[in-house]
Amino acid sequence: MSLLWTGSNHNFGCAVDVKYYGKDSLLDMGTTYDYFGPEAEPRYQWQYLKEGKLTQTQIDNRLLLKNVMKAAGFQAIQTEWWHFNGISKEQETEDYYRIVHEVKSKFIKSKYSIVVFILNFVSFRLNAKQNKEI
Image 1 (cartoon, one colour):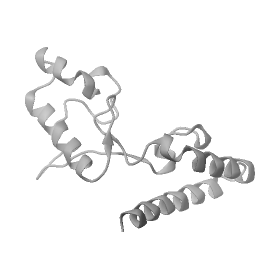
Image 2 (cartoon, rainbow, N blue to C red):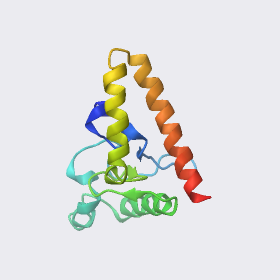
Image 3 (cartoon, rainbow, N blue to C red):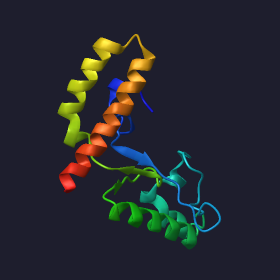
Image 4 (cartoon, rainbow, N blue to C red):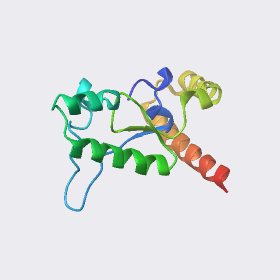
């Protein structure tokens, strides 16, 4: 995660990083989780299939994960097969930065307060999302 006030989607409960377990083990996605080389980027996966750097099974596993997450309301990104956004930073920027600057100015000296704030804020965002769906 990045610093709280820099605006990472993870910091605001807007994104998740996900691995997919099959019946007995993690599905093979062609790279490890949090591998930041080009082989992990979905935008290059068809090229790497042609070059033999990824297999059809690995791409199928990535597509399975992407489709499951899409069905749950998340959006994939083109640079990490494991990263999914529940909502974009742009959709919530105004509220986030207002709240984050408030926290930064009031609680910056207390790591405990920031952790409590993050947990409360993530809980607030999840509840707000659920309420919109009702």
